[in-house]
Length: 415
Image (tube, rainbow, N blue to C red; front, side, top):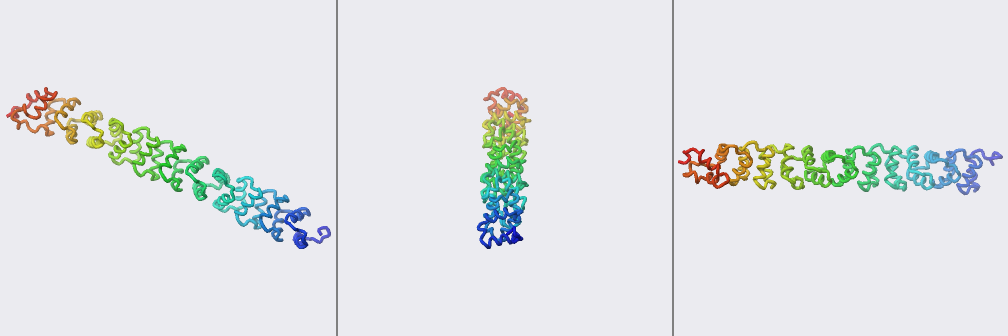
């Protein structure tokens, strides 16, 4: 027909072949059109097949084009299918490309879909890839999104992974973000995990950060936990730091708590340190409190030590106060011991003051005892030998003070 000039157009040819029953299959049609030189471009082929209703399904079209060698590149295929309106949904496209083995790599697929404007949103792309089974692992998914430039921000990446159900554990998420270089700072990581609801407990967060090597210093850890609102109580903070092995010394702990503003009262600090077993000796406790400026007055110090049960004997108390430089005068010492109920007998008081070197003169001793009410009046006693102070001195190892007392007290006191 071509030779004798009866067929002037491809339209006539195909219509006629269809009419007289010469074309039974699409395969025959395409082979024939290619043979007689009627198909010059894939564009002509697809337009024609659509016009004469020889293409009933996209499946037929792609299988046949592949068979007769009309599809040389994925580029041609997708451009043409888009032009002739054969691809109505991204779902059709991906299912088809997978079936005819035109997609060899996920890389090709994403690059192509982006080029032909079949991907309007990242949402469409990922949903479809997941549906047709092209994404087998989270690794593939993230690597490819990064490669084709579909991930511009960490925010997009994590939101998407959570929506698709690709992140099953916090472990997967953090490992992946670290591998891809999407986490540059601890700040980004924690802010993001909190926003996504991936951090349900402080335990998860800290364990994970420690495992990943994201916590390099205790400073970073505590600052961050405070900023995120993950530390609500001092109890949580200290328990956690102790569990993680982040507190190596009492020094670190107290310095940090003070810097963070977590210690509001000395009461909180000492109660907590005692509970955690961080205070092993009274020496550590008092040295530290003094260094931190938490002990401002002797009153605070002694009240606290007594409350905590850290002072068991008057000996401990006075030795410690002297060592720390908290006792500057005998006045302070005696006033304090009396207030705390630590002086039960004059014997204790005098023994201790002499041992500590706080009594340098008998004058100081007697003035003080009178001021404190320990010497009520010698004048009331008919016999200085029976006065309570005199008896106490006479019966104690301070008998020499007893004889000084006899000599020094005015005669009027004996009358």
